[in-house]
Image (cartoon, rainbow, N blue to C red; front, side, top):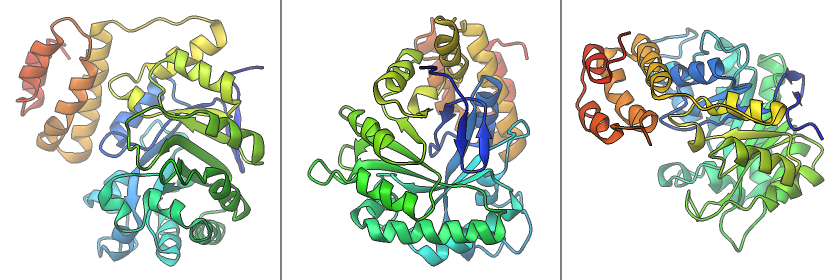
Length: 336
C-alpha cells in the first residue's frame, strides 16, 4: 500500500495526504504559508464564527482586511488550495455564513463538530453538535446547499471527535449522517470531548470510519512525528493525516513525513533553519496584523520553535518580552 498518495475530496484533487489542521490561535495565514513552504498538501484556517460573520456590519459585501474575522479568512499567497472552518449551532446562520465565503473563494468549507472548549460548546457548537447527530446533519445540509448555490459547489467537510464522552462514542453515526447530508470528507480527532487534549487518542475509531463510510477519512490525534503519521496510515488505512499540535513550532514535519513515506528516511532541520522559519513567520504576520500585535503573538510561537534547542530556555526568557521585530532579530541573532 502506498502511504503517500493523492486525495480526492469531492471535486477537489490534492497531490498528497499530509494536512495542517485548523488550530485556534495558531493556523493563521502566516503559519499556513510556512507550512505550505515546508510541504503541507492542504491547510485550514482557524475556526471562524458563523455568528460573527453575519452580524458584523463590516461584512457589507467587501473583503475588509481590517476586520479581525476577515483577516482569519484570507488565503496565503502560496496557498493554491485551502479550507475555511466555520463553527456554529444554527443551520440557517451557518448556511448564510458559508455563502459569504464567496469573497474568499475557499477550496472547501469545513464544519467544526469537534472543538471541546467551553465557550464554543456552551453555544451549542463544536463537539456539542455530536450530542444531536440529526441536528449536525441539518447543519451539513444547509452548508452544502449554500455551497451549491453560492460557492460553485466546493466540497463541504466535517471535523469531529469520537463522541462526547466514553459512554457516548457516536462518531460512526455522526459521520454517516454527515456524509448522507453531503459531506465530502470526515476528519476524526479520536478523542472524546471530555478528554479535551489529555489521555490517549484511540485510533481504532479512525480505522472504523475509514472502513465503513464512502467518503475519505482524515485522521488526527497524537501525531507528533513522521513516525506517528506513518503508523496511523498503516494501522487505520485512513486517506490522510492531519497534524495539529505536532506542527506547532515544527512546520518541517510535513516534508519530513513525506520523505519518510516515500524514501524511508528524513532529515531534521538545524537550529538556524528553525529560527529562520520562525522569523519569516513573524514578518508575514506583521504584514497582516501590524508589528506590535505580531510580536506579541509570536512569543508563544517561538516558544515552540525553540523547544529542545540548545540555549532554548534562555532564548524563551528573552523572547517573551520582545516588542519589535528589531528586538527579535537581536535576540535571535538571525541576521535577517
